[in-house]
Image 1 (cartoon, rainbow, N blue to C red):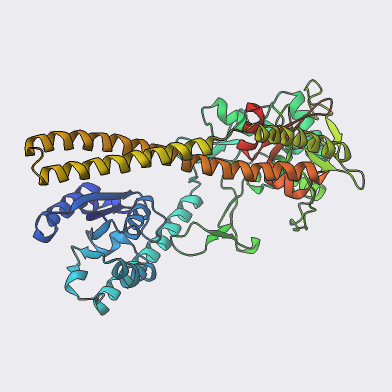
Image 2 (cartoon, rainbow, N blue to C red):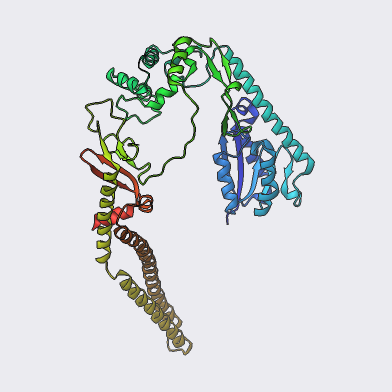
Length: 512
């Protein structure tokens, strides 16, 4: 068990504006206090710092590391500058002070509040502590409301708060949202094409033929590498277009307050009803007219998503295109097939038109699994008697240790009978001790190796059992897919490659 004094320091964004709350000032105050306590002189002092984290919840990296130390029995004392540094949620903090810390024998000290749990003999501070936390919690809620009000005032002035603007816009020097000269014309083209064609497929094809980069590719060209664009190839995703065509901000209206936090300090949010949204007209320059926007809405009719019971099938979320690495779409009514829809706009792509019937793919996958299983079983048959050899070596070293102990006993008897001098006894005993240490180390090494081999054999046994089950089953099953397959890559010409979930299952066969 360790004896650690934990100095916990927290600085939120708002606290950074107050000099006395700075990390350096907190650090100086805590170290000075520790030095004044003689009963903590022999303890190891460790710092736990959360910089820029709110105290309204415990989703903070340093506080989680500190609490792990408490559970492991390493932390014996926690010192903070004041209660609000540890947390502002009275219920959660009260739980730690009344339940967790007493259970693990942890002393809690708040310097500015003159609180030391060691002086309270099991008490938690009573009404004074509860009142301080109540004030702290109300302060957090009040601060949250003031922040929202200030944010809304900035919105009304046209000052855009987010770092990332919608596609088609950029942030001006004064913080307002203005059209991006490179992407604004593309937004207009998308809406106009939507009215003319009425399908996202036609829009995707038109954008590809014009070589228009996707939003992710455009950001990457500006040094904003938020997404992996290595597989896009100038082919837009339907979901991206659907979101853009339903975005009313392109008409100059700004929408805020779509979501609300479940509680103050929480990162969990819920979507509000549209009637509760705050819409600010003429907030920024429009890219399209209201008439064009309404026309698109009528044609596409973005109805609310209804959750449907997803149909289960053996290769659900497993089938991918081997060329572009995008998921294959399963289409059909009774005779299902897997199709690469991503490459549909690009007639030069290797996977353009790639399709395979489900009735063909499943046997191909099973055949590949069977070959792998047979290789695993073949390796099992060619195994050695390594365990028996290690057992024999372990017994031999144990016999040598016993023999040395018998020699040391006989040597001591000769000393007692005055057959040898004390000097000779010590010299010979030293030789026996060195030999005993050497043999014991060899015995320990063999024992460790034997334990590893036994563990490996258990793993191999389970793997061999699964391999035998593959052979005996006779067809692809959901159990085999879940246990063995991470992905199935399908290439033109009905070529199949499996990405194995069980890495050892694949290694065993490759070694064979």
